[in-house]
Image 1 (cartoon, rainbow, N blue to C red):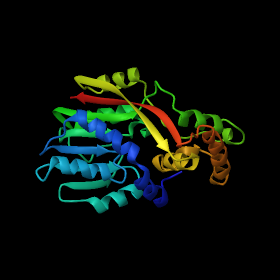
Image 2 (cartoon, rainbow, N blue to C red; image 1 turned 90 degrees about the horizontal axis):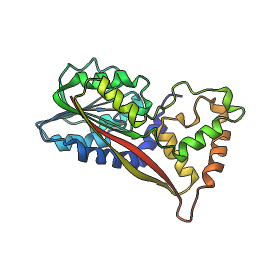
Image 3 (cartoon, helix red, strand yellow; image 1 turned 90 degrees about the vertical axis):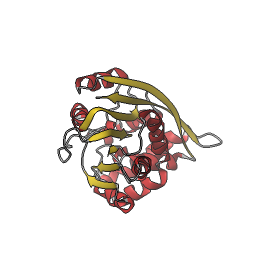
Length: 258
């Protein structure tokens, strides 16, 4: 299912978890005034706009995202030092080699289908000594959202509709290998343990749906999705406490130097 204006707009109201994860990454990345930064998977651009504030008028930030709907929202934030374009991580051919100081990849890499190519492209567009920063879910840790999605979509009739481009959460050892093979000379990886909170099951599913551009339901047809959502809600309801749902997550946070 392609992204929609409704999902893209909805994401702007619920993306605080991804925003905070990005701030944690930025603390380790060392973005400075005057730098040239590429934000890969920028979404609606609110964190990209913050990056533009960090680099100042003498710097420049470019945000790309495969979703035209999210770029349309981001374009409203454009300034002389901040621009947005539709684009994918695997093809940065519109940018010259060695043209950026920083490549920022937050809450995005698990959706990239050719992750080795994406990291090679990030290395190509970085200047010597430039850094890539990556934050995303760890494949070494199974979250409640993955468990519930796998459980529900394995049932009939949903199992007849396999997901075409499922997310791939890399394990730390896999990520280390991809970074090394992409040509980075140094890397540092830490685990960021966070808790995603939502007031109830519907709020959690809404966050998952807008965050994934509608991929919460895998490859099942639109007419079956309300039924699948109801079954997912039933599973999430089991995790509701007096103050909502609290889902533990582990993020791999990487800074690698070219």
